[in-house]
Structure formats: structure tokens, C-alpha cells
Length: 151
Image (cartoon, rainbow, N blue to C red; front, side, top):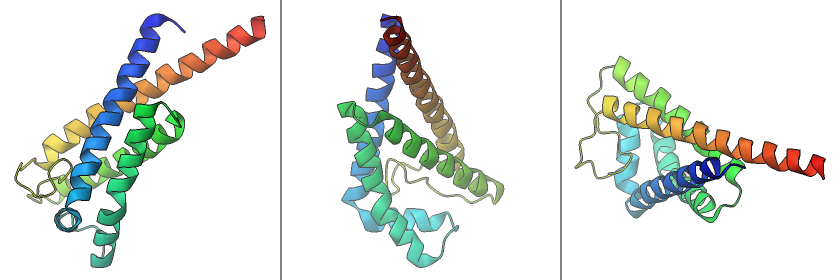
């Protein structure tokens, strides 16, 4: 793999790992506040809001750790990409229903007041980073496989 491709892959992996590790830890510190943020989206029955709030932070933390440690990269990127698409769909739903809520992504207490439009833009940028990190990983695999065939 070319040096620049390797650098971009590792930068993307570490940045994504850090972002999701940080976001997951903030949510895990106050599950009740995060559950109220999930409920504000008005998408799920009440019991499911708490279930999502109790599990989602730990999925984000696990994926963040995997990315930082350079383990299970494909699985972590697939899970985070799927979660990110789900977040974007939920945010579009909030925008279409004109709900005035805080996204709760990096501040489950709701003090940051990040609107759904800003959160959607941030999620689009994160999705671009997820896809580009996957692409750089795939490029690494093609180079490795190609090098093995030449041997």
C-alpha cells in the first residue's frame, strides 16, 4: 500500500475511533439523560427508548476501541456505518416533523443545544469519513493480495 493511503487509513481509523469512543462514553455516563434524548425523537415506544439508551453507548465504545486498536476494522466500520445511517434517517424524520430537539449525540444532558440540521451535517461528514476509511482499508487489501500473487 502506498504510504499516503496508509496514512489516510490510519488517520481516519483513529479519528473515528476517538469520536465514537468519546461519544459513547459521554452517553454511558448518564443513561437516563440519554434515554430522554432518544425519547425526544418520538420514534419508538417508551420501553425501547431506554433499551436503545442502555445499549447504544456500549456499541459505540466497543467499535471505537476496535478502531483505535486496529482490530476488527471491517466489523467496526460496518456497525458504525449502519448506526450512522440510522441516525441520519432519524434526524431527517425530526426535520420533516419540525421537532425542535437537541440531538443528544455528544451531550446527553442537552446543554449543547445541537439542532437536528447541524447534527445531520455532522453525521454526513462522519459517514464520508467511514466510507473513505473503508475505501483506504480495501485498497490496503488489494495491494496485499496483489503482492501475494506475485510471490
